[in-house]
Image (cartoon, rainbow, N blue to C red; front, side, top):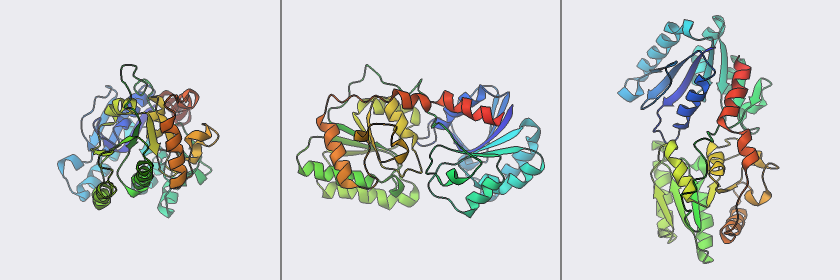
Length: 338
């Protein structure tokens, strides 16, 4: 098939969306041709059957120019795609869903988030199918929704026998935003220090401009709590470079709401981390010792204490990782798209 993908970024070096570069590569194995329209492009290395068109954010063009470029591309390339796959950004379906339906293009939306609105509902109306990974996603309620694997490239994300894990190490890797809840982990670590529990914690990630003050408050809180010798903040790094970071740490903590189902949970699992999460999608899927109640600091403290003291704990997540690997995602996706 010939597929049009609309996404936010094509950039292998992006800390948040760099993973999508590997998705495009895997998708290209199932397509005669892929055309990608992105808001912003950076460095990429894609197969010859993939063409990337940018709306121009990397060049600082105006939002009006974004819109002009978008309509120009979807019209000019209309004979080069049979279907449309919109990744996360419902706005593009709101802008063009009616026209795509009018000219007979099937539209598919991938949207995985606990929040949504009537605009999400309207975008879904124009879709043949809607995809998400979490049964708690806002989009899970539609009859046309299909739950999909998370899509982790297990050929890249895997244990490295040549890397020694930092003793008593804890990793938090995400955007530094209230939605990802790093403040809850900091509160738990404050208690562990007071109880003289040995640990070192590394926080990797950048804030959005709107979350800059939140991030500064986090760093100040660490100083105020006397944790600046235990907690180290690092800038966000390209997704491809996180493999080494996962492999260096024993424990990975994820605090996002269940509607998000972050890929980092599965990346960490694939690299052999002890994963502690409050994500309810994993209830019944993994041992209860890895799960804590959402936003419950005392429960998180209990799970962290157990994981830190049990230095011989080796998690076995092979079955769930196999169900959520990228090849499985591509197979399931194109069975529907075709």
